[in-house]
Every structure is written in C-alpha cells, then in structure tokens.
Length: 117
View 1: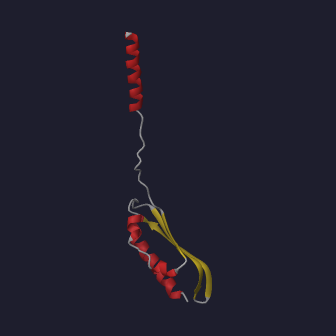
View 2 (view 1 turned 180 degrees about the horizontal axis):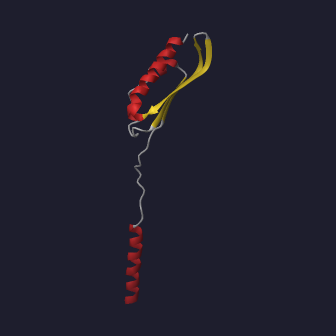
View 3 (view 1 turned 30 degrees about the vertical axis):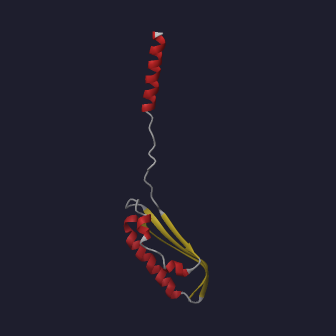
C-alpha cells in the first residue's frame, strides 16, 4: 500500500514537472504590414483616398520596415493622346518615411489627374 502511494506521488511530480517546462506560444506576436494595395475602376475614388488612414494601418511596423503603397486603376483611360488599359504605380520606402511616401503618392495622383482627358 505504501509503495503504491509513493509511486503515485512520484508519478504526479514527474507529470507536473514536465508540464511546468512546457513553453506556451504568445498569441500576441507583433506583425508588420508591408504592403497596401488600393485598386479601383474609378479615378475619383483614388483622388478621394483617406490619407490619414495609412497612419493606423502601419502603426505596428518598426521604423525600418520596408513598405509599398500600390495604387491601381483598372479600366481604359486617355492620358494626353494615348489610351491606356490599366494604370498601376508603387511608392516604396521605410515606415519612418510614411509622411513623405504619402506626399509622393499624392503628387503622382495629381500629375495623373492633370494628364487625363
């Protein structure tokens, strides 16, 4: 009877110590958004883009994370004298440069708007 009791106690401590050494994964691992793609058929939607929303999208990124802002218009457009099927442009840089990336993208959209007919 004492032997069974001692064996049960030893088994209990063995199982407990193995469970105590088990590492649990952290479900809240940091993530980084490295790309944002804005795709539309209407150029007007591109001109009405909410630029301030980018700050909250890339908030968890480290300053050195490389990001791409991708803008696409999926339809035929006339640029000056040329007809183009689809337009796509990408602005790339680090998260720490987000403000300047937004300005560059806005300038490209403005330039595109000036050349649309």
